[in-house]
Length: 229
Image (tube, rainbow, N blue to C red; front, side, top):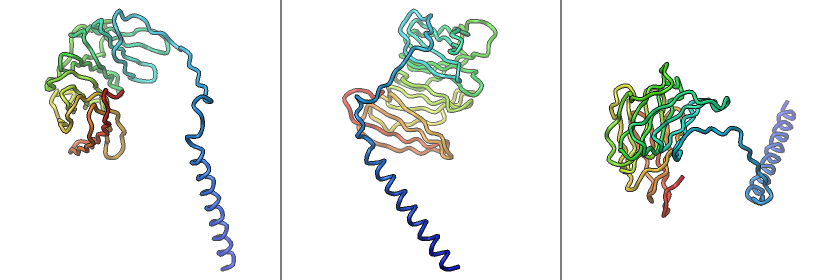
């Protein structure tokens, strides 16, 4: 029995060593591939036309539902797979900079821009056009650069006033305000897990981590002369 155990242990050690060698070889090759030798080809699958002004933002609501916000003062909702426009929204402000699409029930579109506020529109309508907003979220002192629904009940905005705000969608109340940055908040991206985390990128030169009772916000900030994308 002991000889069998020693044999199995020896075999496991051999396999472990082999795996280490393979991983070391793979890692050593990463980064050595020339970018010029990698050919990537793109083709236009759909061309969604209808805006008469510059399209400033898009947001996916599902695998086929897409919202586009333009400086013609309109948001269009598209069935991207069918190349069909399903709803039009007339904005209160033409200088829109961002839009967000609620992805669970596809019920809300949120927009923001140079008016320093986030405006909510209800898309669960029977008419082909929405002309009135459902709610307005006030509290930022600068333009809105980003808006994203975390779920049906919460929404996160980023602003040129150097802050991010977490909102209750139903009550329009601000739940959290993140103020640790000294320049315009331009972008953020979210990774969801047990402790919801949000990684953000700013036009600043510091790194900060903010914790709240609602979720964890971690900011990854890079020093640069321009704003990140």
